[in-house]
Amino acid sequence: MRWFLPGILSLLAAGPAGPVAAEPAPATVSPPQATPQAAQPVTAAPAGPMPPAGPMPPATPGATPQPRIGDPVAWVRTLQLLQDRVAAGSLSAHASQPMVIARINADLQNAGPDVWADPRNVRAAIVFALSGGGPAILRHLTTQGSLGNPEATLARGALAYVEGREAEATRLLRDIDLAALPLTLAGPIGLTQASLTVTENPVRAVALLDRVRLLLPGTLTEEGALRREIFTLGQIGDLRKFETLAIQYLRRFPHSIYAGNFRQRLAFQLMRFDVGQDADRLATLNRILAELGSESRRDMYLLIARTAIQAGKTASALVATDKALALCAPGSLEATQARLYRAAAEIVTLATFRSGLRTLRSLDRAMLPARDAVLLDTALATADAIGRGLTGQPGPSETEAASKPGQAAADADGPASLIPKAQAMIDQVDLLLRKASP
Image 1 (cartoon, helix red, strand yellow):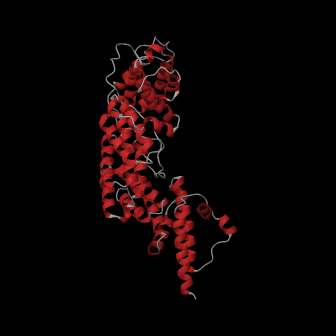
Image 2 (image 1 turned 180 degrees about the vertical axis):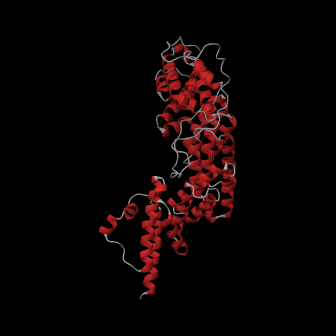
């Protein structure tokens, strides 16, 4: 480990990271559809301060590795400190993780039996596996048959979890008392228990995540627990605590590498609350987004509006676009997007159909990103179908439909939720026409 520790430690000593662009798909231009986030590796927190790096210069590429020093506890502390900088927004720390994990993994597997006679080193290996290190070291340790309890149970449970055997992991880890574990192990085990519990017992998952947050403040473990708890609260409908923790996350971890994905999921969850139908929920939305700067707030409102259109929640889309438009520069891309989203919501209501159609026809398709151009095509084709119903004209033939790119977009898998919503409107128009023409 010594050959790469100086470089890593100099990175850790560099101080807090400044604001960075978090996530490969930030919600800055034409926010994409929010989708449930993929589960992140359980992350651990630092067990204590690292020894000073000393006078050695950073290792250069191709340098001969020096003899390994330290023990698994120290090696895993290095990874934990690096991961805590990820929570602060360091892209360089994030990029360094694969190399650090690969080296620690090799060191752990090359360690002799005397190393694993110390339970502290076994616990460090468990933390490593649950911090994105993979199952290899736990497979090695659990096949030796020399681990004592509770380390043997924890190792088997963690291995089952990492390998996706959730039933076995639940059986082995469900009743583990976090109070009996060292803090650095209690955090990852608590996150694992919450993940295994959240579907069947989300209330218990929330309690576990509360505890993990308090155990390891300021770490990537706290950041991960906070993210997970917020969306669990959204699932169970605890709006008050959801608001409190969402604001806490935006204040405490605004530059986390995972903050961009968090905002996309937050927009999806806020849309599900259907803020356009409830004044209290709208107030909650506004208080949460007030924590953001004006540009970020604008982008969040746009993301919520587009997500609401895809879910058929037109009232929420209208509310969000109005908020976004107030923050958009006239003639900007964002203003065009907001007008598109508003018009797409307006065409599915008879009272606003014609104003929405006029707006859609006035938009410059070439100015829009590809996904919004598809939405425009879909909305125009849908408006055309509704307009035919209003005038009593027959719909286009299959040949005509195939020749029209807008209609083709509507028939494709574009912003598909707009289509069923509008189809219900078409059915209503047809019914009115039949009643008017006996």
